[in-house]
Length: 501
Image (tube, rainbow, N blue to C red):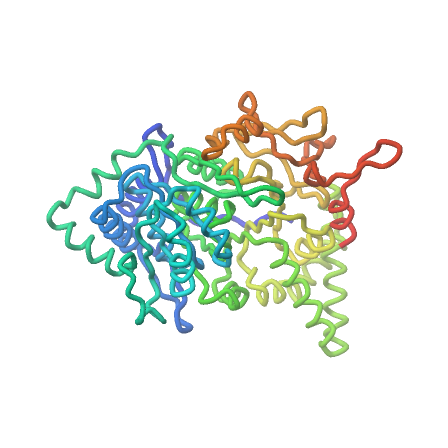
């Protein structure tokens, strides 16, 4: 289905060799100041607004506080916790002084935390609260570079007295002490950064071996934001709900890369369990979720239809059937007869519009899903109710995505076409290869894996697929999971499973 018009256009951003994420934050904060909200956090049922000036102030003070603690350019800071403004501020503060950010999943086990902190040579571990502090203390003796464990939420921390512990509030206070003594210190630190500097060290999940640390530069992330927004423009009046882990590259792409470039407002839900309710309250224009969130929405609607009175149930069924007929014609590029268009307008007015509103999708222009395949029936459902849901394909090593559906050109069994400045081709053995300015710098401490993954500038994905006659990419499965039949033909169990959903 076609998308609705965008919000206010974002300010123009030129990506130069010197531009970094903190420099872009400085520019955005100076441009918007206190007249625009940069983010909101829901606490005790109330959305708390934070302006761009306040955003920069928090980053500034934390960066100066980190400097006072001895953190310097090239040092690694590991972060772990739920999506909260404080986590984002700590990330941007680390980047501002030339440090490298290493995110961990909030539910990472102690052994997983130890491996990442030890392998990355992280000097600081910044955690949300007591649970993260406990993990940090449990691994500290086995991680020789780890000097500080910093926490944000004071709940349960009263009895902790290890000398390596420090609150984020204390880091901020040290920054407040340093700032008036040297008012230009923060700007000098930010000015030293270059686009090719490493910004993020992302550990990709390993099934048969330890995770590999992918090195992503500021330029990688900036170009990803620029090229994503070239496909689907977002504006400064748009809202985005940030609830996927910051340790997932897709969330970094949207909240950091696109957020800083477009200037849209980030919204942090109160709790992981309240995400769907908070999405309904915000009604974002831009939404990025894994398939499970969309599948849960479909189940919610199906249950409501089953529980509805007979007349309402008939109305829902009729409206979804009409929406489905229109969607099928749009997807196959067939004209929609006048009578069907008229029925569709009536179905939207009476039923579909209310369904979108109930799901928090009343204002959505761009909805994306990735990380796993979404079944064709679920994709069809959302287009049937008027939601512009598109599949994406990418990986950590390309700073986000390489392929996405275009408006009006969505197909059930594909993930779309390459974004600008990105080439995608298929190797003789069926492996998907890509090349773009967003391709990572290599794996940390692993030149062998880097040489295997990066060859002549092409990123080898490890996925099998093909490009169809409409130049759409079709993804089958991981190469190691594709099976071969007796006659030599190959098939993907995951692809078949997705098609049967």
